Image (cartoon, rainbow, N blue to C red; front, side, top):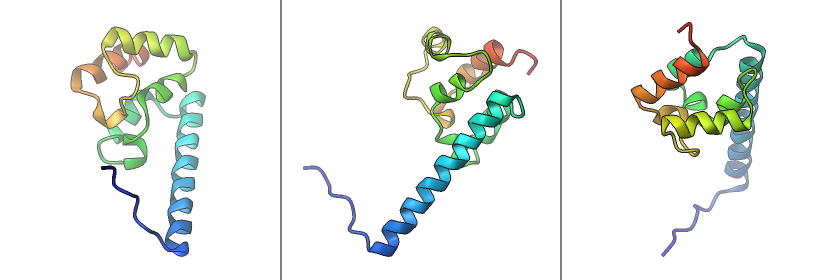
Length: 108
């Protein structure tokens, strides 16, 4: 039997919505920085272990945000490496991280 979400007061609901909006804004900012080349894939992978905002980002979305990488290349590369499309940055294994860096961030 599915569990019901907890009952939240109006204040708690507003606080949760504000927190979610802030996390979405931070992730959009990170994707923009990645697209602009101010942040590297290696930087995000390193931050993912300790930063919930980064660690819970979907790998596919991050790869699509890289300069010169689109939806097709991102999905194809993830399939070749063996990474599920639902995998988040924090959930990547060492070999998967190394393979992604070899493809998308060769100077690392």
